Length: 308
Image (cartoon, rainbow, N blue to C red):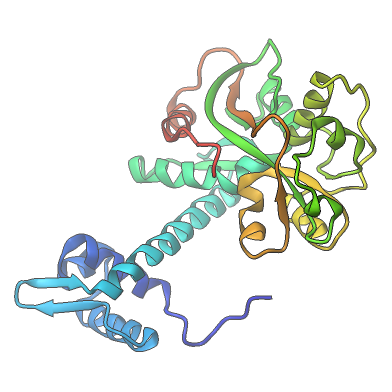
């Protein structure tokens, strides 16, 4: 497990550094993030002390990041944006019903994409209040049908005819295996028929990923897939189970990126190329208006790419 180091720089200092790079002066950067300049000078000095090198060159003309600082700015911006997404997502989950528009999203979208959309929405509409319910794709559609939510977001391959929808992005599914799995040694790609015949670690029935696998197997002429070796209710739990050696799984590239980078799991190519699915906003009747409609517009304008 990753441990916290007392020498790790704090988020305010990283936010300040990003602002210096954007504003060109320490004073302007401090004003941008609402920090007193005296505190900003101390925060920047503390950041440089923790990192062990200068990140900003100060002169009468302003403040410029050093070459080393430019590298840190790129990393710091990722941390700051990730925290903004986290806070936007957490705020949506805990928003009170009073005055908040309720939307629903399937697990993958709620974990990795909705926080980005919510943060973008708040930048344009700071007063927008959204309450987010996290469900599987089938449950999202039912919530829309019964008017429990204003709009839903799903990755299900089939949207019922009575439900309206709009494409907001695409997602790439990846086959992951434990490093010691026999498929790690093979040179060829795994076929859809092989996946259908393999006991996988899967989400619960009704999830968009599971329905996509069922449909892919049917398209390959396989009427019945193997019984899952385990059914787990979260992407993180599935990744952990695969890393522990329980079996292969098929998940969104968003859910497996970290585990692939640190080598806990391996990716296996699928015959026929990459597996992609559509991400859709769903609603009943006329297109959503107000905050719900603006959130759909934000999601669509982001045009989520399938990933690497």
